Structure formats: structure tokens, C-alpha cells
Image 1 (cartoon, one colour):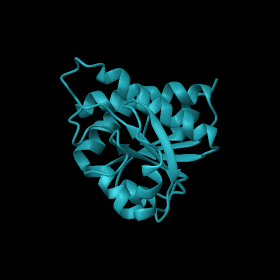
Image 2 (cartoon, rainbow, N blue to C red; image 1 turned 45 degrees about the horizontal axis):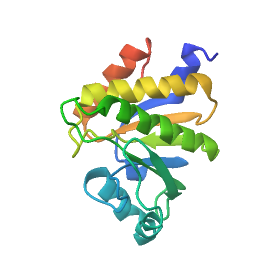
Image 3 (tube, rainbow, N blue to C red; image 1 turned 45 degrees about the vertical axis):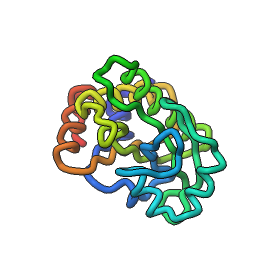
Length: 182
């Protein structure tokens, strides 16, 4: 069983842009069609280049709560894990469980590919309107449960776009991982 200090060393919260992350894999907050869109999804498709869209077309979509993987093409990351988060409907449509499933399935996929470092955006908190505080708790709790039992990925970054989101994720990490510094 890993120590609390070891878990702290594997998780990082940072403010930044997901497409600039120099990690083995970045996670795309994708839609079910996997054909690009707005927000994080659009930024990743634009930065990766047209080959990403071409590969995504061959995947035949992805259900909410699940994840699929492609190459990273023109991104610094070798891989893109496309995780489809839920649209917020006031918490009445199993949104919490679906969001948790996104993180869990992304981590399982990363481990199966031997991915050592991964960067997550704040899945579903933009265009899909999932409450950020709630999403942060789900993301961190799911990640913590996973890394307590698995050696890979060794490094998990949560990349927050904007200072307010960064502060919310950092506060959640400090609540969930006592002594967490960032």
C-alpha cells in the first residue's frame, strides 16, 4: 500500500493549457462522436492536426463514461485518450457515476498502454456545465482510488484552464489528500 507522501508525489494540480503538456498522454474531454468540437476538444484537434480527426472517424464514437485512445500526432504527447464526460442535467441523470467512469476508464487505458505520465483537463466542467467543485472531488477521488492499487501512470497532472478552476482543484486536493501542497 503506497504511503500518503507517495500519492502526493504522483498527483499535480496546475494552471495551464492541456495541448502544451509534455507527458505521455493527454486526455481529451470529448463528445460521443469523437469528431472534435468546442473547448478542450476543439483545441486538442486543432493542435494535433487533421490526422487526429481521421483516426477518430475510424473509432465509431464512444459512449459517455468511456474512453478510447489515439496517437497524439502534432501534440507534445504521444497519445490522446478521448474520455466522454456527461452533460450536467442537475444531477438527475447519473452524472457523478458517468464522470467517475471517465477518469477510471482513462486510467485503465493508460495503464494498459504502459503510459507513465498523463494530463487530465477538467472533464465536463466547460460546455457540459458540470459543477466544478463536484467534478474536482470526483476526479481526485477516482484517481486516488486507482493509484492506490496501480503503479501506472506514475504521474497524473490535472491541468486547469484559468486561475479560478485551478484554485478549486487545489482546494479539493488539499481536502482529499491531507498535506497536499500542489
